[in-house]
Length: 470
Image 1 (cartoon, rainbow, N blue to C red):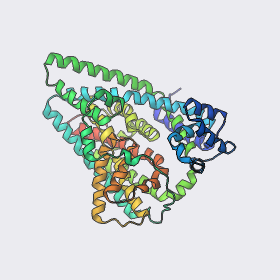
Image 2: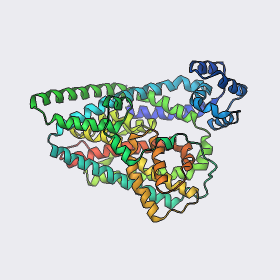
Image 3: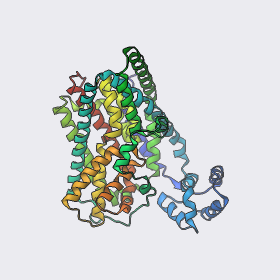
Image 4: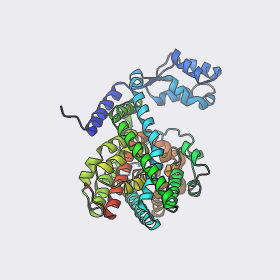
């Protein structure tokens, strides 16, 4: 019997997960097990006593449950324990039975990211050789990132001004967003923090820009030492990279199960999907259409005319990483699969892929940049603010810079939108308007990010004179 291709397995898992999540939607209520969990997490007795007022009630959405918590006396005292309280009240046993598969899959992929980035970048740079080769490759890579991100932002800006999804939007449909202002960083802070004061601490905290900076410096100076020592280090990091790719191939086998767990929980936990689409449909359509134009027109044209390669063949080769990126909403977690597909299926050399792809997964965020531009102009339209041409230009360039700095910041997409809103004087509360659909749109923009990274590897490999399978 012929084995079903992995991308078909993933697609089937995705469809089954959506149906499963729609059938078993999540509710929230307090049971005896809820209070056992609260005790284990050391939630004070006085807080638990307040929650007893909700014992006989079941809430069919997160928003109504949050409202009930806010209506309790002295509800401010609950804020410190809110995530634990929500977890304790989570009531969806069918989803709990399958969501662990998604958690394990994501943890396995995240386990691979740092050793993979370090070993691939260092071995890639030592393969590139001289400083002039590295400089040429670095310049091409950076130019590709800037140009494609700029085209993405421009596409989003044109469509959001054409459709005007924010005009007449319900600004009472705002969700509270906590901690965004505290997580903001200036552009100067992002630049300074690229250089880690402790590389082990940077690895522990997943500070990707710092890890990439260290890998670039370390790899470059390996080429500057005695040949005998350089060969030992080069062989070591190449061997580590090969081991990490073997581990990646093993983890990939479980992708359909992992995606089933992730997507089933995501769908089940969404509050009133139908109402969400009705109220935010035009905004979602604008973002998705802009991403589709960038993905299906702009990037393929670049691959065809600059890379002299077949975008359709490359797209087929990238089916597994793209479906995984869509399901997990993490370009970093998808990186091992992207490297494997670009090298083994599209024929890009390890020298190119090991340099461009880890860098791209962290810095090249076409989908995120496009989304931030559309979101900022949508918020302006919703609040009735007529942005001048200069303000829109500021949004374009701030979104470009923000997409590069996004890797260094937790809650990256939302935090960077606050930077753009601040730059043009829009209310930060507007972020709450888009929060309800952020998780859904994150799936689309992450797939766009990964597709752009892979196209970049193909284009740069071709300009370096490589013979590809596409």
